[in-house]
Each structure stands twice: as structure tokens, then as C-alpha cells.
Amino acid sequence: MSNVAELEQENDQLKDQVGHLKCYIEQLEQALIVSRQQRFGASSEKGQGQQLLIFDEAEQAYQADQDADATPESETIVVAGHI
Image (cartoon, rainbow, N blue to C red; front, side, top):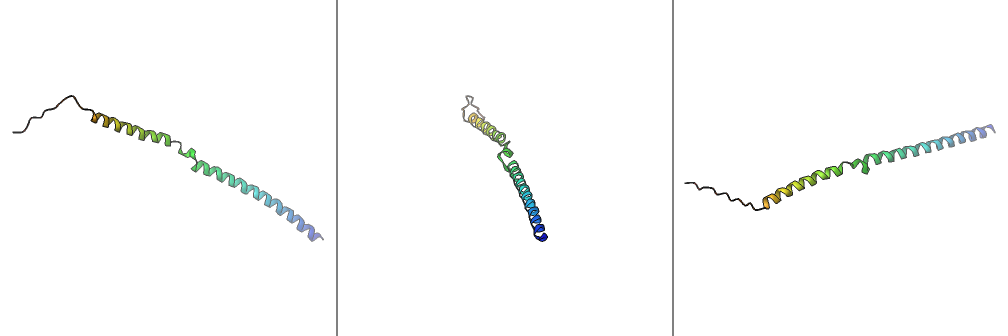
């Protein structure tokens, strides 16, 4: 009879251990989710808006150069021919 009581006590201890381990696994899974969000989430792309402004500035400078080249100049340059 004592053998049955020992087995029941061991069974209860193992059930408690399983419960603690399940809780620990859940905590680790949550930490992994948070870690992945911090590493790969949208917040890791914060500087991208500033990077887009660089391209916008370059396009504006290019467009300004194109506009300057397209405007006709009022001054005519005459080059003397070679003899």
C-alpha cells in the first residue's frame, strides 16, 4: 500500500514540475516574439523616411538643372572661325 502512496506523491510532484515547465516555455515564447518584433518589426525601419528625403532632394536638384537647361538664353555667343 505504501508503494501506491509513493507513486501518487511522485505523480503529483511530476505534475507540478510539468506545470512549472509549461509556464517557463510560455515565458520563453513570449520573449522570442518580443525579440523578433524588435529585430524585424517596423520600428527597426525608423530611418527609412529620412533616407527617402535624400532621394527626393536629388530629384529636385536634377529637375532644377533640367529646367535651367531648357530655358532659352537671351545672350548669343559668336565664335570667330579659324583661318
